[in-house]
Amino acid sequence: MSSFKMIKEKLEIMPSKQTVEEFDPYCKWQKDGRDTILHVYLNGFKKELLEFDAAKRKLTVSGYRILDQYTIQYFKRIFEGPKNSEVDENKLKFTGGILSITFLEKDSTEGAITSITEWCFNEKIWKYVERIGMVGVAACVLINCCLCCSA
Image 1 (cartoon, rainbow, N blue to C red):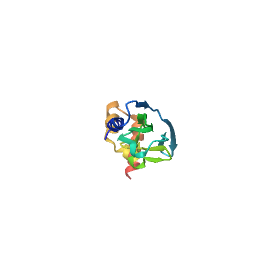
Image 2: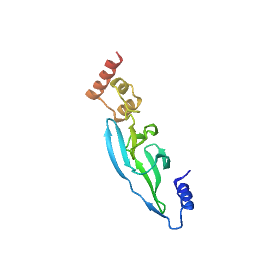
Image 3: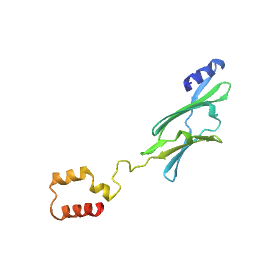
Image 4: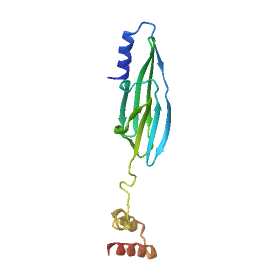
């Protein structure tokens, strides 16, 4: 159920003098090794009245709380994690009014050449050498590198 529907249902059972206030929660970022944790301070909110929608490194969080019989506070925030990160939905924690969201750092070496052997036998490297017409000492170094790696 969307947050808007939840609020609408609550408003239908409340007196006609109700108001809906927008709430902007305090947030704090923390680095934990390779991962990044976002702490969102939601004192007075209940976990069952929060909604989460994760898409790669973005997380939309929304929710509401009833302050009194006439007032509902509502918020909706989109948090974007650091580059090379993804939201770990299994590591969403809500304790003591603090929502902790962990953004896991993805391995940045994906698709990168990680060893000299891999570099020597990389087809793109050889095409580049042919294209620029590498000769002399540079070509010898490249050839020796490949001979050493293949031995």
